[in-house]
Image (cartoon, rainbow, N blue to C red; front, side, top):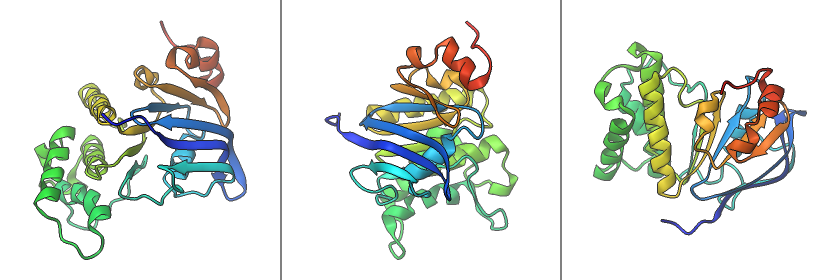
Length: 241
C-alpha cells in the first residue's frame, strides 16, 4: 500500500463554461485510495467538475491541483471516462482496438505497443468483461458492451487518479456489481476515484459524498451527506428505507 498523500486539492473552486459558473465554492482535499461520489441530477455540475479536474475545462475561480500539478498536466497518471465517450463508428474499430488506445499516453506518437502493453490490455478487458467480445466492431456493440469497452480503455491507462462519469450507465445489475468490484480493487492499490452518478447505491462505499444541485448541497461521509433532508433538497424526493 502507498503512504496516503494528497492527490486532488481545490480551494474556493468555481467550475462552468465560458463566464457562466455552474458550481462554486468547491473545496476538496482527496487522498490516495479515496472514493468521492458526486451525486445529482443532470445539469447539477457533476460532469463540469470532472471535466475541470481532467483539464478539459479551465477553472473559473479559486485554485485546483491534481497530483501536485495543473489539471491535464499528468496524462499518464490521470484517466477520465466521459459520460458519452467519443469513438468513430465509421472506422472498423474492434473492442480490442479501443481498449489499446488507453496505452497511447504511455507510448507517445512513435513508440509501438510492446508485450507489457498487450498484457495490460488483455487484463483490463477481462476485468470489465469486454474480453468476451474482443473482436466485435464497436458499431455492432450494445450500449452496455460499449460501456465495458470504454471502461477497460480507461483502466488500461494504469492511472493513479480515475475520473469516472456515470461508469455504470447502460449496465445490468451484474455489470454494476463488476464496476463496484473494479473500483474497490483500484482503491486498494492506492488509486483515487472521483465518481459521478445519480444512483444513491453507488455512494455506499464512498469515503465522501458530494451532493450537487448547481451548488454544494452537502459534502461529507455517506451517512451524513445522504440524509433525507439533503436528498430531498437535491432530488426532490426522499430515499426509501
